[in-house]
Length: 152
Ligand SMILES: [Zn+2]
Image (cartoon, rainbow, N blue to C red; front, side, top):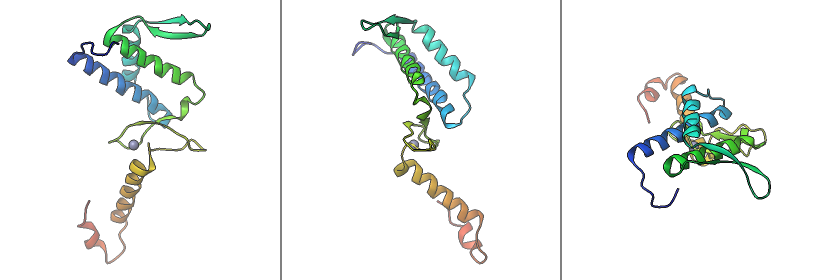
């Protein structure tokens, strides 16, 4: 898509839907369910972008959108997702477990068990929240009234 090409409100809405559908599919690598609506959104973007296989100068096949403009640009994003799925590292692409974050990140941990985009931000916030929850739900005797009234 050419820089400065016109983009409308519907294009923006569609782009956000495709982004969320991509997150939805990547969330499958984080153990979350992949919803049919996300698959339908991606299938629609691939169809609208008119993705076609092309063989490049080196003989390697690749997908390209025949559509131009915003629809073609979204088709190119779907191609990027497809290419990531072909990689042996695909399952390391995950969705941050923080509901307020939902960044996609590459899990570099040895056992592929990372849950947050970074420990420094989302991981530590989640740990602090769990710690506070434990403090409130299992108060020691004599601390019940003091802990229950304190929030945040
Ligand atoms: Zn995060």
